Length: 389
Ligand code: EMZ
Image (tube, rainbow, N blue to C red; front, side, top):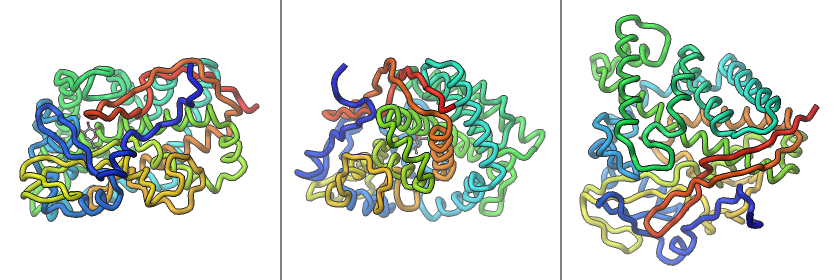
């Protein structure tokens, strides 16, 4: 193995970001101009008139999902003013992770997962601990029985692709069919879960349709799966290589909020997100044609050396941290409150229970974006966790 730390995610965009500010890649014959600088990314995210999200469903995602779904994800693939109304319907629900009861349940789930991992000694953390944590936490967000997580765990880490492979329509259908069935059940027999709440929501003087509710549910399942898994796995690898940081969190628990933001900045679980250009325009002195795509490269913006001091280092208690790891402007991540709580409780619990972590084996998960290669996490990570007590 090389000397390079496995938790180090080097930024492949640095040269392009400094030299010209944009890169280019092809994606299934639908090219993308990638915006690399924080300032451009923020400005463009703001301008929904020229850079729209409400294109053909799946097209603003890179790699494009137009061939594997017809359902529009809501509010993600909608523009203002409709976006504002949809968002208002779900905003309060997605803030529930701040409630004491929710936090207590989430803490219990994570404590149990870490206790089990400590008992095992050596384990493959993604399949045996982190995917289960993500899935069980999702039962809290959806307000469904915890046992539902077993089904979601059986799908693996990414709902739209087979492990390490291209988009897989058959696999995606497993999710769509599942959501259809759950929505039918909720329509027939309403409860207190997100499906029922959505179907009972009023929108523009009528109830939300089943297709709209499905759009919210697909987003909730897909958007918060591999992103949360990568954030947790990368953080764990970091603490394996930085026991002094784990000790610091234990001794200075008040910095955990800052540490969470710094991990999101540094690991940037979602590399970029696209927009479709509605009229001929110019970015970074580069002409862009109407109906082509640009992407907002959050991962590059988060390493912008004109904004962040020592951008390629993890500074646990970084003071000024205007990162865009959860996106920016009206489309900023709806699940961010939930994700932050998971990460925060995970780190606190880890610091309380674990003294050191040994790396046994790993297999990197590397994204290929045209000429750029970016490590986003791991396909496999075998660790041994050692108990504090
Ligand atoms: C979409 C996206 C949302 C997409 C905030 O990101 O996440 C991706 O992982 C999904 O594949 O469908 O939900």
